[in-house]
Image 1 (cartoon, helix red, strand yellow):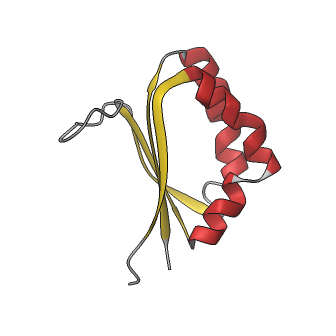
Image 2: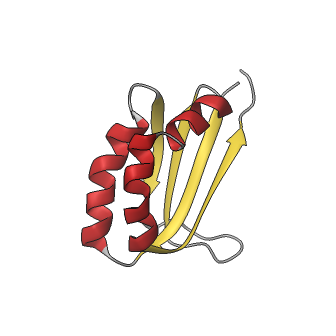
Image 3: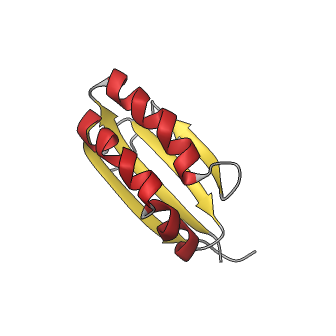
Length: 98
């Protein structure tokens, strides 16, 4: 069953965030093990108080998403995102088979 990783935040340090972005794509194997469905730096807020940047990745399963998220390669760069952003959150949701 597909799974989606939805991440949202406010970029406070664009230079450090750029370093994160350069390493995150290869670490998450975008285009091979997952698909980048959205990367919107100006998301429209309809409810709540999320940050303006939203990223959505699609994986074949929650297990695959967790495997890549928890990999040493991704864990080596995630600290840059956490340091470069504020108000961040990430949720992993199961998709609808289809």
